[in-house]
Image 1 (cartoon, rainbow, N blue to C red):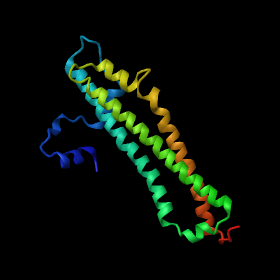
Image 2: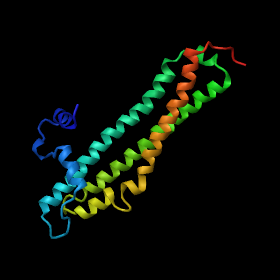
Image 3: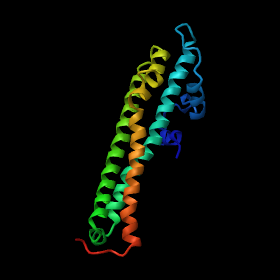
Image 4: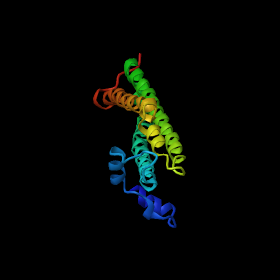
Length: 184
């Protein structure tokens, strides 16, 4: 379901004509217009709105990663036969526990990045009344903007999620592919 259709479902009376399509927003953000103080205010407001649309889209995509991390943990903890897990040798159980911990850490890092994106969106929204597009651009992509401060959380969160899935897959494979042995 697309963001605009969700928006219409949640707020049917809102003015949908004011939403810039995400494709156009991405083009405008990647190729900013003249943002100088003497530039057209409507163009600067469209640029700021485009930044907000891209941030909204970013949060939607990041939420998928967050759902993946928490979903993997829930699936593995809730659906595994505990007697077969406990029948594994100690190294397999340790790998399972470390995998769960890594999934939790990865999900937390991605959640923190989503929070930083949200805080950046709030700062960018404060730029709308004065059409301060230069400040909005600094917040989103400047030298002390969102990527410089927080992008590492997203990158490391995804890496940790992948490592966690790998560590969870090993004992799961052992449970279903190798005959369970008695615990020492």
